[in-house]
Amino acid sequence: MQFHQLRLPSRVWWSEWPALDATPAVSEPVELDAEKSVRRALPAIERRVVGFRWELGR
Image 1 (cartoon, rainbow, N blue to C red):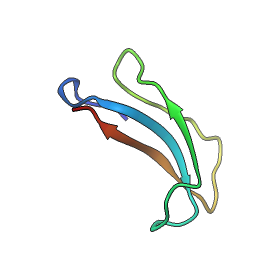
Image 2 (image 1 turned 135 degrees about the vertical axis):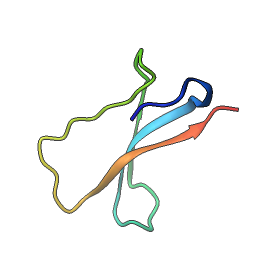
Image 3 (image 1 turned 90 degrees about the vertical axis):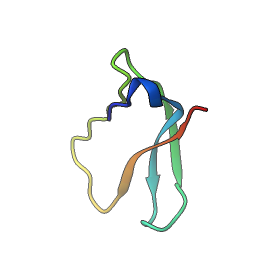
Image 4 (image 1 turned 60 degrees about the vertical axis):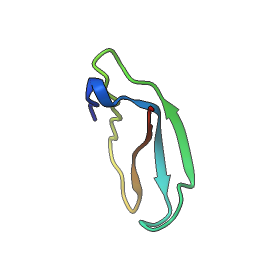
């Protein structure tokens, strides 16, 4: 996921949720790269809700 230069997040996490309406069960901080992006490669995933979440900077 790439963020716009003028709307960079202050923090980003890779997270796993037990259900769509739940709070994350696992969260791992990740850093933006030089392109203001975060990436995660998954060889396979089943029966999981995963993705990035972030807080926007002020």
